[in-house]
Image (tube, rainbow, N blue to C red; front, side):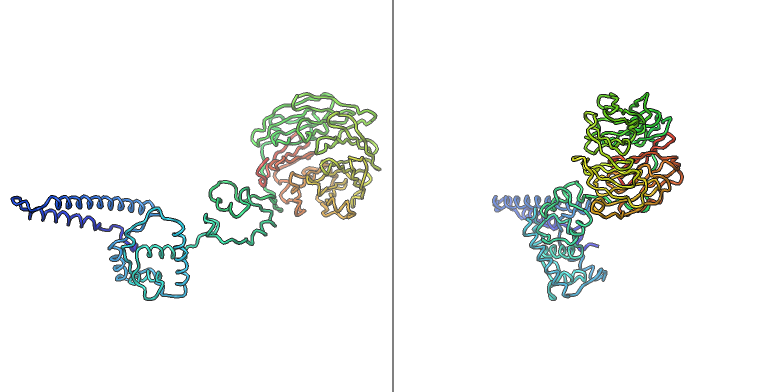
Length: 557
């Protein structure tokens, strides 16, 4: 129920009637014979009548605007005051239907302060339109119970309409305090530092561009940019959220085992190669996975194929004394080798440096062959004590890790071609796989017993031989390991047993319990790769299929 009548009777209309009556009276008393009525008086009366008609029109326009604001909810509509306000207030008091009342208490001091602040705000912000009727209207706040809370003093009763509006707004602001971030006026905000800033730094939460200082917060509601940007998204352990998609090579399956799968750096192109001597390229979208091209090599069953990190070429090798290089731009295949001065009969295992400058092949009798990716010529060799079985680059391609039959992990400096560190892999007799994280802080070493040791590189180089985690979920030889792009997932694979593929949550060093999926047979997994953005995971198996999965935690492929 409103304290102010929604349909006030316009006093101007009553006054207009009175003017008409006056004119009619003057007209009746006028003596036509003597002409006693002067022309000036008649013009004055006509002018007064015209002014009253204009006022009536203005009142009607105001009434229309007020009704529109009432119907359509304009929060900036002025409050109209009239006699009916006092009459309705008296009716409410007589009926005793007041919602509540509040006697004078210490809270009135707070109300006074709030109203003072409101007055200060209104002095700073000049109103667009002022209703003159407010000053002439008197409101008795002592008669109505629920208006008594607006009093500043106990004996206060009648206030002006403008003061009544200010006190109502102050009371509303007191009962409904606004949120700090929603205030555009920086003067209303206290200049203080928030305690949650330190917690945001601990959680690696940073402000988006344009919100680094206090002044920029005034524009927080005037843009559609992200207000909070997380610098690192954390993957949760326990259960991995994923879904099975259409097989990556569904348009053309391989007739032999898949030995290599790899995503191009643009995350849309996937390479799949195997013993059927074909290298196939697919455009991955998770729905159709269209085949783009295939390359057939007559004399080389493919054991490994890999993109150069710059994405310009594909290096292809098998159990041959030569290898192939496929130029993606020119669509041309070049046969390279045998390497000058070497007698290796197989170059089937190799690794490419992250800077795309060097290709490291496994050689005979513990030799590591370094080949330039530009000239495709042998540029140097490294020699281990035992037989070399696995390689991994680190430190942006300036360092190389190797392991083999002597159970030790070697660290090589490729700038000086020397071994600067060598240590035994704990519990390892024969090392079979190596893998380094993208940031180079950790590396994983697998053995023929199925044990995988995860080390911190700095601690390992500093003399600490104890691994930070020992993974014992596989029982057969570890053939392949791979970190994803943000090093939160480590894939461990063995080709000796069905479904022997495990995914480990690296931050907690726990294996996901819902992988491999119970209702899906991975067959004998032989290779795996994550897309650059982490959204896709491709698994090649001995049945010639490339299984494709979507990891829901990652938004991009």
